[in-house]
Length: 310
Image (cartoon, rainbow, N blue to C red):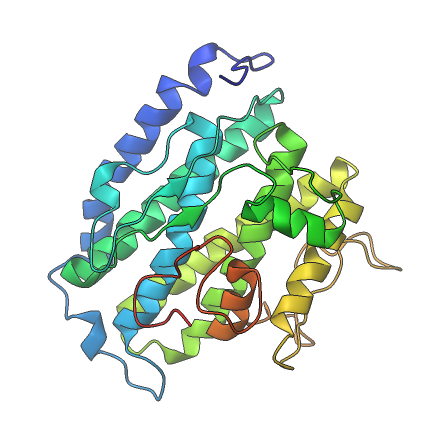
């Protein structure tokens, strides 16, 4: 088991205390949903889309797949366990998760940051599942495991962070954890930004905007930590792989490096109007599947659950 020692912090910080806080936060999710008008008694999301895009329910289920991925990664990193059974069932085939391990955090601030993100992502899963009610998809197969052929290693190899046959373990230490986190957060921000125009129900749109803001805070914080730790070059290599996959269909990508000549650092990727740039579903799938124009692979070995998956 990973070393659980935290510098200047009691042992309970990362172990049972963190888990209890996450469970407690999740238990108040129903109250949050009722206030936001997002509990299971609201008008079914599938019937509320007012635009030319997919139904709201399909959009929220697409987002739920991404939140499952993020929650699994952060929960394993913080607690050594993934989502509980009551967060995993739903429509479609319920998958399994390639296991991660608890990160041996040494820096109190980074440990607490990881705890907060894990709690946020679990609450996002809870919120979306409540909004979707019985139409919420089950968690699909997710690969956040460690090995030479696991997705983290494949992407790290493509970025030039490791060599042939080597393993990238995002749970090995704090630096590796932050690099692994950087892969997810920017994708989530741009996915929500790209989907916003198609959401018809104003309650769902408000919730999506709120989640986007939280994911953007996560992403900006992770970028800042990586820069402060001297890992800008590693991040830039990951961003280059993302941009290549995102642009595979000739749709462009506004993503730039973390360090930009003439600027302190690029802690927020924006378009020419200083807006968070958008990715459509195909661009997002290219990244999380690890290859362009495929129906499964990468972090989702059997593809996502729901109607938007390929």
